Length: 213
Ligand code: SF4
Image 1 (cartoon, rainbow, N blue to C red):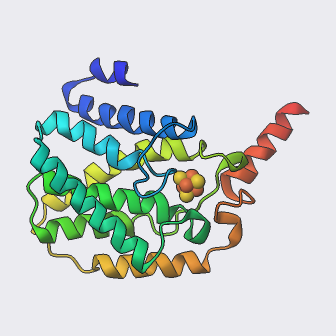
Image 2: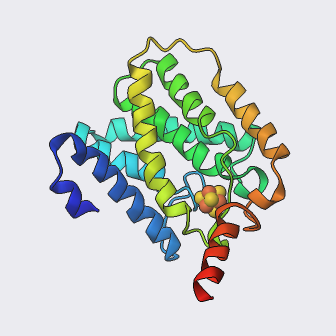
Image 3: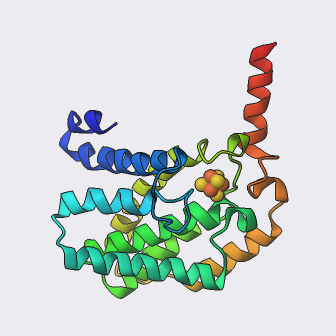
Protein backbone atom coordinates (compact mmCIF):
# COMPACT_ATOMS: atom_id res chain seq x y z
CA UNK A 1 0.00 0.00 0.00
CA UNK A 2 2.81 2.40 0.88
CA UNK A 3 4.73 1.64 -2.35
CA UNK A 4 1.56 2.22 -4.34
CA UNK A 5 1.02 5.51 -2.55
CA UNK A 6 4.30 6.82 -3.94
CA UNK A 7 3.26 6.11 -7.51
CA UNK A 8 -0.12 7.82 -7.26
CA UNK A 9 -1.16 11.22 -8.56
CA UNK A 10 0.01 13.89 -6.13
CA UNK A 11 -3.50 14.46 -4.77
CA UNK A 12 -3.85 10.79 -3.86
CA UNK A 13 -0.45 10.23 -2.28
CA UNK A 14 -1.61 11.72 1.01
CA UNK A 15 -4.76 9.59 1.07
CA UNK A 16 -2.86 6.42 0.28
CA UNK A 17 -0.26 7.16 2.94
CA UNK A 18 -3.05 7.47 5.52
CA UNK A 19 -4.29 4.05 4.39
CA UNK A 20 -0.79 2.58 4.59
CA UNK A 21 -0.02 3.92 8.07
CA UNK A 22 -3.40 2.98 9.53
CA UNK A 23 -3.11 -0.52 8.07
CA UNK A 24 0.42 -0.89 9.46
CA UNK A 25 -0.70 -0.12 13.01
CA UNK A 26 -3.78 -2.34 12.76
CA UNK A 27 -1.69 -5.21 11.42
CA UNK A 28 0.73 -4.70 14.30
CA UNK A 29 -2.24 -5.06 16.65
CA UNK A 30 -3.56 -8.15 14.85
CA UNK A 31 -0.13 -9.78 15.14
CA UNK A 32 -0.15 -9.06 18.88
CA UNK A 33 2.59 -6.47 18.62
CA UNK A 34 2.86 -3.18 20.49
CA UNK A 35 0.21 -0.51 19.85
CA UNK A 36 -1.25 2.48 21.64
CA UNK A 37 -4.91 1.90 22.49
CA UNK A 38 -6.40 4.93 20.81
CA UNK A 39 -8.98 4.46 22.19
CA UNK A 40 -8.82 0.63 21.96
CA UNK A 41 -6.56 -1.98 20.35
CA UNK A 42 -9.13 -2.71 17.64
CA UNK A 43 -9.33 0.97 16.70
CA UNK A 44 -5.64 1.72 17.26
CA UNK A 45 -4.80 2.47 13.60
CA UNK A 46 -6.93 5.56 13.06
CA UNK A 47 -5.23 8.24 15.17
CA UNK A 48 -1.63 7.14 14.38
CA UNK A 49 -2.47 6.74 10.68
CA UNK A 50 -3.76 10.30 10.50
CA UNK A 51 -0.98 11.65 12.71
CA UNK A 52 1.90 10.10 10.76
CA UNK A 53 0.53 11.15 7.36
CA UNK A 54 -0.24 14.69 8.53
CA UNK A 55 3.16 15.02 10.20
CA UNK A 56 4.73 14.46 6.80
CA UNK A 57 2.23 16.44 4.76
CA UNK A 58 2.02 19.46 7.07
CA UNK A 59 5.60 19.21 8.39
CA UNK A 60 4.30 19.29 11.94
CA UNK A 61 6.70 20.05 14.77
CA UNK A 62 6.64 18.36 18.17
CA UNK A 63 4.68 21.15 19.86
CA UNK A 64 1.81 20.78 17.38
CA UNK A 65 1.90 17.00 17.55
CA UNK A 66 1.62 17.05 21.35
CA UNK A 67 -1.26 19.53 21.24
CA UNK A 68 -2.99 17.48 18.58
CA UNK A 69 -2.63 14.33 20.67
CA UNK A 70 -3.95 16.20 23.72
CA UNK A 71 -7.05 17.19 21.74
CA UNK A 72 -7.55 13.60 20.50
CA UNK A 73 -7.04 12.34 24.06
CA UNK A 74 -9.56 14.81 25.44
CA UNK A 75 -12.19 13.69 22.94
CA UNK A 76 -11.48 10.01 23.66
CA UNK A 77 -11.68 10.54 27.41
CA UNK A 78 -14.96 12.43 27.16
CA UNK A 79 -16.45 9.44 25.35
CA UNK A 80 -14.83 6.94 27.70
CA UNK A 81 -16.10 8.64 30.87
CA UNK A 82 -19.53 9.77 29.63
CA UNK A 83 -20.43 6.88 27.30
CA UNK A 84 -18.24 3.91 26.35
CA UNK A 85 -15.37 3.00 24.07
CA UNK A 86 -16.14 -0.72 24.24
CA UNK A 87 -17.33 -2.63 21.18
CA UNK A 88 -18.74 -5.27 23.54
CA UNK A 89 -20.94 -2.61 25.15
CA UNK A 90 -22.01 -0.46 22.20
CA UNK A 91 -20.68 -1.88 18.93
CA UNK A 92 -17.99 -0.47 16.66
CA UNK A 93 -19.46 3.04 16.82
CA UNK A 94 -17.89 3.13 20.30
CA UNK A 95 -14.47 1.97 19.08
CA UNK A 96 -13.78 3.10 15.54
CA UNK A 97 -16.44 5.82 15.83
CA UNK A 98 -14.60 7.28 18.80
CA UNK A 99 -11.21 6.87 17.11
CA UNK A 100 -12.53 8.74 14.07
CA UNK A 101 -13.89 11.48 16.31
CA UNK A 102 -10.50 11.81 18.07
CA UNK A 103 -8.58 11.86 14.80
CA UNK A 104 -10.97 14.32 13.13
CA UNK A 105 -10.60 16.78 16.02
CA UNK A 106 -6.81 16.40 15.93
CA UNK A 107 -6.68 16.83 12.14
CA UNK A 108 -8.82 19.97 12.35
CA UNK A 109 -6.39 21.43 14.86
CA UNK A 110 -3.47 20.64 12.54
CA UNK A 111 -5.33 22.43 9.75
CA UNK A 112 -5.61 25.54 11.92
CA UNK A 113 -9.24 25.08 12.94
CA UNK A 114 -11.05 27.14 15.57
CA UNK A 115 -12.45 25.55 18.73
CA UNK A 116 -15.89 25.47 17.11
CA UNK A 117 -14.50 23.72 14.03
CA UNK A 118 -12.61 21.21 16.18
CA UNK A 119 -15.74 20.41 18.21
CA UNK A 120 -17.73 20.17 14.99
CA UNK A 121 -15.25 17.66 13.59
CA UNK A 122 -15.40 15.52 16.74
CA UNK A 123 -19.20 15.64 16.65
CA UNK A 124 -19.57 14.98 12.95
CA UNK A 125 -17.17 12.03 12.96
CA UNK A 126 -19.11 10.45 15.82
CA UNK A 127 -22.51 11.24 14.32
CA UNK A 128 -21.77 9.51 11.04
CA UNK A 129 -20.67 6.32 12.73
CA UNK A 130 -23.83 5.99 14.83
CA UNK A 131 -25.18 2.46 14.61
CA UNK A 132 -21.94 0.89 13.37
CA UNK A 133 -21.93 -2.70 14.53
CA UNK A 134 -19.12 -4.85 15.89
CA UNK A 135 -19.01 -8.17 14.04
CA UNK A 136 -15.43 -9.46 13.94
CA UNK A 137 -15.16 -12.58 11.79
CA UNK A 138 -14.22 -15.55 13.95
CA UNK A 139 -13.85 -13.25 16.95
CA UNK A 140 -10.52 -11.96 15.59
CA UNK A 141 -9.80 -8.25 15.31
CA UNK A 142 -8.94 -8.64 11.63
CA UNK A 143 -12.06 -8.56 9.42
CA UNK A 144 -13.58 -5.98 9.20
CA UNK A 145 -11.41 -4.20 11.75
CA UNK A 146 -8.10 -3.70 9.92
CA UNK A 147 -9.60 -2.29 6.73
CA UNK A 148 -12.11 -0.29 8.75
CA UNK A 149 -9.27 1.53 10.51
CA UNK A 150 -7.79 2.59 7.16
CA UNK A 151 -11.11 3.74 5.72
CA UNK A 152 -12.05 5.64 8.88
CA UNK A 153 -8.64 7.33 9.13
CA UNK A 154 -9.26 8.92 5.73
CA UNK A 155 -12.80 9.72 6.80
CA UNK A 156 -11.41 11.59 9.81
CA UNK A 157 -9.27 13.80 7.57
CA UNK A 158 -12.16 14.36 5.18
CA UNK A 159 -14.37 15.31 8.12
CA UNK A 160 -11.74 17.84 9.16
CA UNK A 161 -11.61 19.25 5.61
CA UNK A 162 -15.41 19.52 5.63
CA UNK A 163 -15.53 21.32 8.97
CA UNK A 164 -12.72 23.65 7.93
CA UNK A 165 -14.85 24.75 5.00
CA UNK A 166 -17.57 25.92 7.41
CA UNK A 167 -17.61 28.65 10.03
CA UNK A 168 -17.83 25.97 12.73
CA UNK A 169 -21.50 26.55 13.53
CA UNK A 170 -23.45 23.30 13.77
CA UNK A 171 -26.74 21.98 15.08
CA UNK A 172 -25.84 18.83 17.02
CA UNK A 173 -23.21 19.17 19.76
CA UNK A 174 -20.45 16.64 20.39
CA UNK A 175 -22.05 15.85 23.75
CA UNK A 176 -25.39 15.09 22.07
CA UNK A 177 -23.69 12.81 19.53
CA UNK A 178 -21.87 11.07 22.38
CA UNK A 179 -25.12 10.58 24.34
CA UNK A 180 -26.84 9.27 21.21
CA UNK A 181 -24.04 6.79 20.65
CA UNK A 182 -24.44 5.51 24.20
CA UNK A 183 -28.20 5.07 23.83
CA UNK A 184 -27.90 3.51 20.39
CA UNK A 185 -25.40 1.06 21.86
CA UNK A 186 -27.83 0.13 24.63
CA UNK A 187 -30.55 -0.61 22.07
CA UNK A 188 -28.24 -2.65 19.85
CA UNK A 189 -28.83 -6.40 19.78
CA UNK A 190 -26.03 -8.46 21.39
CA UNK A 191 -25.25 -10.13 18.05
CA UNK A 192 -23.59 -6.85 17.05
CA UNK A 193 -21.51 -6.36 20.18
CA UNK A 194 -18.31 -8.34 19.69
CA UNK A 195 -20.06 -11.70 20.00
CA UNK A 196 -19.48 -12.60 16.33
CA UNK A 197 -23.05 -13.96 16.24
CA UNK A 198 -24.28 -11.53 13.58
CA UNK A 199 -23.34 -9.28 10.70
CA UNK A 200 -20.24 -10.02 8.65
CA UNK A 201 -19.10 -12.65 11.13
CA UNK A 202 -22.23 -14.71 10.46
CA UNK A 203 -22.28 -14.07 6.72
CA UNK A 204 -18.62 -14.89 6.25
CA UNK A 205 -19.13 -18.23 8.02
CA UNK A 206 -21.85 -18.99 5.51
CA UNK A 207 -19.50 -18.22 2.63
CA UNK A 208 -16.86 -20.54 4.09
CA UNK A 209 -19.38 -23.33 4.57
CA UNK A 210 -20.73 -22.75 1.03
CA UNK A 211 -17.27 -22.93 -0.56
CA UNK A 212 -16.55 -26.23 1.14
CA UNK A 213 -19.67 -27.86 -0.32
S1 SF4 B 1 -15.57 -4.51 14.57
FE1 SF4 B 1 -15.52 -4.84 16.80
S2 SF4 B 1 -13.52 -5.78 17.23
FE2 SF4 B 1 -13.41 -4.81 15.20
S3 SF4 B 1 -12.61 -2.72 15.56
FE3 SF4 B 1 -14.85 -2.58 15.55
S4 SF4 B 1 -15.41 -2.79 17.72
FE4 SF4 B 1 -13.30 -3.55 17.55
